[in-house]
Image 1: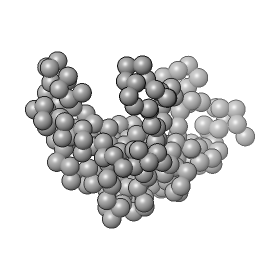
Image 2: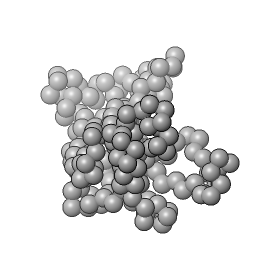
Image 3: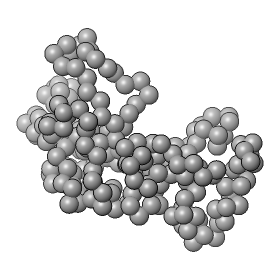
Image 4: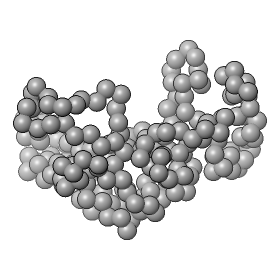
Amino acid sequence: MAWNAAAMGADALAVSATGVEERHPPSGILPHNPDYEVALSAGCAYFDADPSLYPVEPPRPEDERMRSFDALAEGARGAREAGLKVFARVETLANEILAAREPFSAVSASGERNKLWLCPNNPGVRAYLRGLVRDISRYGVDGVVLARFQLPWPARPEGPAGGVHCFCEHCASRAAEEGLDADRVARALRRGLGEP
């Protein structure tokens, strides 16, 4: 792939260092690449993560084929051989494994934990992301692309109903520092959504 990118005039390649489950993921054998079956592992590291750099155990792929393959090292090697710069693409706040396993998830106005999105103000999330960037820097990449670095807000007529908000203790504390009453905002949002 790196040679194809270079032949098309690209000067850099972004390699996914972590992943997130997409809405329409491919599965099975792909027609254009019948030699390999698709292996999906959402929310995990696609490289040989150093656990000592994280506050919690970094998620690893469930599929053994992916667990024993360092996609970041291979992608970086291929890009360098093709004369390209290498950027590691990292999913930040969208991580269903950590949201399920750790007390890191965003909390709705009604107190429900989100199953995908992490809280950007949670100290554990921040420490995890710092560890992730430090870990990836061991690969000598030219930069890190931080994907999904904010909670999603839908651009749809129904407004906040489809968005993700966080009202956890960390966000409430941060809101108070800015002079906002998070409980009042949560009540207003629940009223606006027709919730009790």
